[in-house]
Image 1 (cartoon, rainbow, N blue to C red):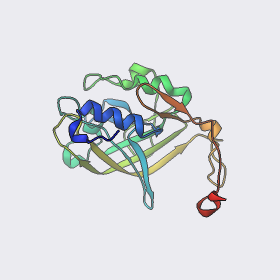
Image 2: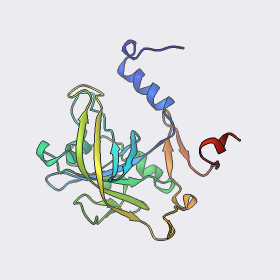
Image 3: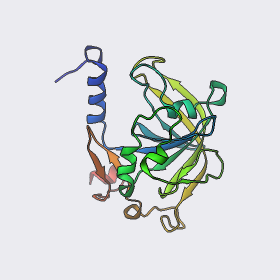
Image 4: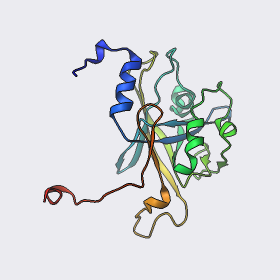
Length: 212
């Protein structure tokens, strides 16, 4: 099968991406509006960018009518009308239902924290709260938003943030910054309604040694 994106509808392109680019880590992103209302939403188009400086990115697509999702409205720079901040909370198996529930499209101004029943914990450096039940949270200052198709349905938005502070639950990491992956128990997103756990793992060396 050979496919050309231009020959496919937006929904078909989306299905290709989420079904073939797997597994994807899930950023449970918390923000606060300029009027002080909290927001929470999951995004699996998400990854780390680099360590110097420590940077993360997530990609909220536009709504079907081309408008911005609430998370983007809140997280975009102050110069664009947002607060310029967000928190990425790690999605775990214990929080799986809350992560999925936070994807509910609520009217702007209603909080998903209340809908899914998670607690807003205090952040160190940003106004947006972290999810208290998540074992890891990255507090970020938005440095840039790259819009791939502004105002269009499904248009992508790359929100890039510099990490200002990191919360790690006690006992999750040792003095060498090695994470206990079983204790973290992160989940990932597959295609459709499928998710995956991260307990089935294997190890191998890097580079040429992996081939022997």
